[in-house]
Amino acid sequence: MKRQNPLKERFLTSLPLTLIENVADKFRNNLSFNFQFFDNAQPAGQDFRDWNHEQLHKLLDKVKEYCKNPSTYWLKLPVGGGKNHILEIYGKFPVRSEFLHPKFVPLDVDWARFRLEGDMRLIGFFVNKEICTRLIASPNIFYVVFLDREHKFYKQS
Image 1 (cartoon, rainbow, N blue to C red):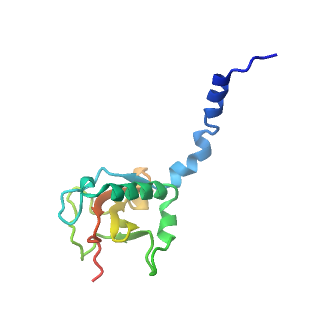
Image 2 (tube, rainbow, N blue to C red):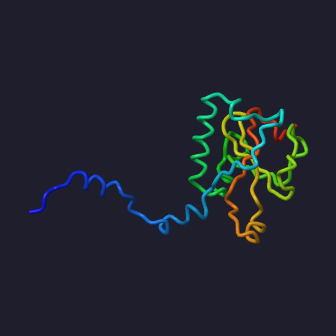
């Protein structure tokens, strides 16, 4: 009769049961966030230190949730009472904005925003799918450029 080894059993039960090939669709299709183009120098926007603990907590919780699905899911998910969605892709930089297009952000990106809560927005861009195909890059990366606590990026009227 074999002797029980609780440490061995605990270790073996803690090991993951899947390989990366089994979850490859999550890598290929789900949304990712990238902060390499983050601009905290514009008066209309904010830096992370300008947001309080609760706002940062909500931001990170939302980003974590957004990463669980592809961007197409968030484009269709309605929010509020109107025709708005969690994710809106504007394409060109908006004419009516309190922000300026940063010189270090390429001209041919698709500007977009994620609605966080109330007037809080996460502003950034996607790289066009055709360009991604040529560059062998992922079209599911949202490049964060601005924190917009007061909805100043895309002004309605």
